[in-house]
Image: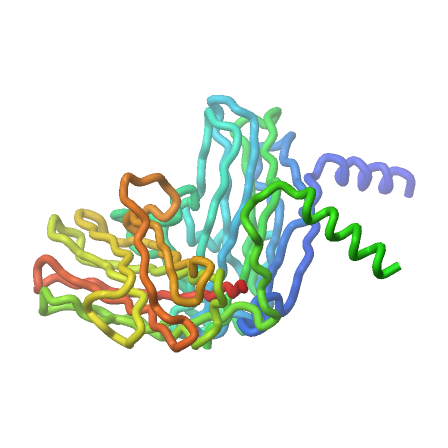
Length: 186
Length: 182
């Protein structure tokens, strides 16, 4: 029993704490918007595995057929030549570290912070999405890439999973804050 | 007690340095208008209306603003594809209004953003003069202005124009959010 407790304690210490979330249903009143926000920074260090840092829940039916979700996130990290990967994933499960890639990852190296804006558009159906295929550092721009698509059912809960990965595990990647705002449109 | 509180408040207001006055949003919250399905222009080089968002009368207030975000795709070629957003007092106009635009070539998709701000009056607007593909940037262009009466219904008209009529420009999705402020 003591041994299991010790192992559990070690696991808890080595795993990054997930961001605490706060949700404000109905923010915006007339628009019926929903805001989900992390409530503090989350650090990733000690591993090179892709790790979920925050999972922003988009409540079932909050988008409508033509609504949009704007995700804004501020990251900081060790300023070095090693890649820090910032990978958003839009999935039907919280904390997913595979699948659901609508936006390409950002892979900063010799900088110290990154702010991203991602927009998820429902495409005239609750189970069809489009997105601009950009890592979020230049959300308003043009590209030769095609528009990204997915087909998740937003009449059920979906999740924007903000994940990180380090090329060098002794470095640190921090998700400082992240916010998702849902704009409902029928 | 009330008199003392009022006195302290007045003293605080007098002591504050002059800075931008803050508008307080009315309790109605924001309003969202969105396209329902994709629309395209092809077969013409004339400016062609793709979507219209009604901004209901009195929803902006004197200092509210409208954010319009668009996602579009188009033929990847050297020819120009232009997306035009016009804040107007009437629906589906292909000229005039407070214009925000972007012209693209040699790419395939684009996300853009325009912001129209009421300028401390319900009939005075101002917007960034740079192309809407770079809404957060610096520019040598002057800001653009208009005098549309937003105590009446106003319209955000989105249109497309092709340099070569056989190509295609598709408005995949667009939405406008009104953030009111008095």
